[in-house]
Image (cartoon, rainbow, N blue to C red; front, side):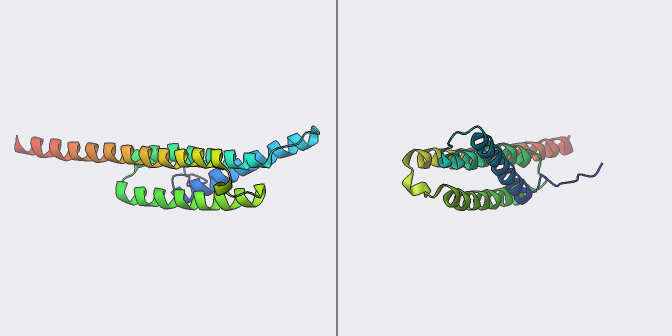
Length: 144
């Protein structure tokens, strides 16, 4: 069966996740406005961080299944960088405050970026270890 959306592509996954999280934020905003409450617009930063954290998890999983690990790794990195840049620009425009002005959000965002780098690095090392093990097993079986 053919996929309707190629969600394995890091660019599509990044833009799709950002769009989904922005729609969830918009829905949250509408519900708060309908209920007569006031919403802290700084919460957009939480939604952007959520999108980048979900991207981290799924890109790490996709690296394990990629046929060409190094190519997918570089695409995943570029997709994450694009997700962060676009997310930060949108969150700054919506909230009216830069991440540099928000000390707590900045610390959490640094943690999220660091988590992405650690997850992708660990998964890439696991994939390289698996490839090395397969090659070693094939060479061993050829000798027998």
